[in-house]
Length: 378
Image 1: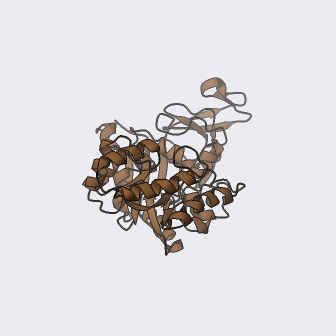
Image 2: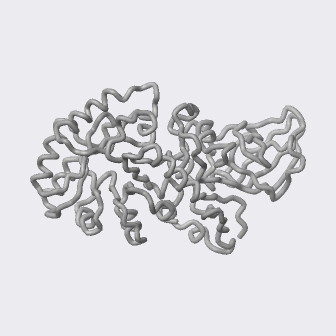
Image 3: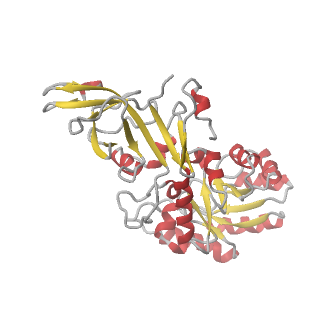
């Protein structure tokens, strides 16, 4: 079965982005965040492409074990800690760092009897997980008494990606615990890393930045120069047609031509992961030129305006995002969301093409199943 859309993962670009971050942070460890299947880029693919990473951070124990079974020996941090008591024993057996962020997890540790390496999470305003500062100080003391290796403190800022909101208050709350315990800490995600050097601490946790996602887009004032797109989403033109003034196209007749137009029908839609919310005017890239989407995105196709590109036809490639001239950030911004949502939303039927050391590995043959083309961890 022929596939008309695919994603391309550029592993040299990923390694480059990590190296760029390390150059900016010579005295701080950089943990690569690979939760949610490596932000849609592939858990094992990302981890194995970053053998130099100081560590990895993720959510699920199963993902952590997948990395260990694949030979990853770098530190791995379970960002939400254990989801059930048995996971503490697995974490000890596989030398995983575990976040402690709630009273019930603390109770499990009292009963565990294993000398786990733990990080105590402090609630500085996100108010999902974590202990308030006063309680966090006593939790550290109790964990030490239990024989745990308290590696440090952790927090997650609620508004790090909003430059209009200062980090002073959450930072002061966090520093109460840092000062009282003398522990190392990890406080900065990508946004905090870029805007607030005082938050860098022992280690930063970089997710979006590694995948070339600017948390402040469209503001680029804090963005690192030279970062490269890692994921490119592309598809082929499967049909062309002509519109006359007054002709409408697509579901709901959402777009009506005001002049003669040449339309290209692209073989990708929300069934592949392209956002249905993308409005008319959202750009795509064809032959290096930006042209607009017209009408409503359908499950399997979308329409673009090819009026200015008479030479383009059936079979030609369209970049939907992931080029230096058309970032995923821009598409997400036009849809009222963030790049991470779009990247995580790519569906399992989409073939994956890898770029490895400047060599392109083709997708699996078209007669393979979608599951084989895009396995969960690859």
